[in-house]
Length: 325
Image (cartoon, rainbow, N blue to C red; front, side, top):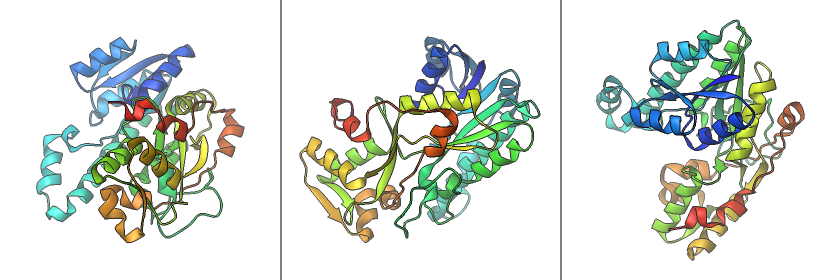
């Protein structure tokens, strides 16, 4: 298959590209700069110049592909157009800048998905994008049973912001696109990780302690990026339209265990904080650190034959790749 991948040179994207190539697929990647084009060519990926706001480029790339994997997301304001940056920074009260930024990034993502899906409409070809398992949980609940694939995002979750993506994908699944969601855990780990775990390590270094909330029994699911990449390939090859898959290798790792591993590696105290201290300790990560998010991937494994086999989260964190100089 000829697969169009956005975010092909990102942390997860690089693993997905390698997985696809090993399986004999060819990859076309979105490149927003000449530097990105050069990097993609080095990866033996055909670059397609453009960005997430280039609807015509995205649609044409999808039309010319046998399937699309959409991994890119605008995480920083610097990647937005000038008009959108001006709106975010000057379009209202300074206290609402984050809200305006989230609205802009969600809008850009929606238009990008719509553009690519339009290029696939009626063809039955696959389009796969992502959401986070944290969007299923909210801070007022301790979960008795793991979240399952059929569960829906919780409007009270601090991770609900991108939940509209699921509705968009579900809509396209009714219009002849084999559109699917892969929900990823907060801890997609492995060499080159720049996500939540490195941020927790940086906070522990700065605060000179590694913390958890309450008894630290709240759980985060986890997956190694190479296992996640294998799931994207399987979904591309045989996933079902409208499916919501869970890219979860470990159902739930106690947050206290994550904090203890970080503390031991850094040689700093491991401490408990009350929930009201979460924002002071973790900044914007505070609401997420409080979440209990055990998540099952039983349905995903049964349907697609996915079998994670890479290192566990704690084994991965407890290594030089996270703490080397």
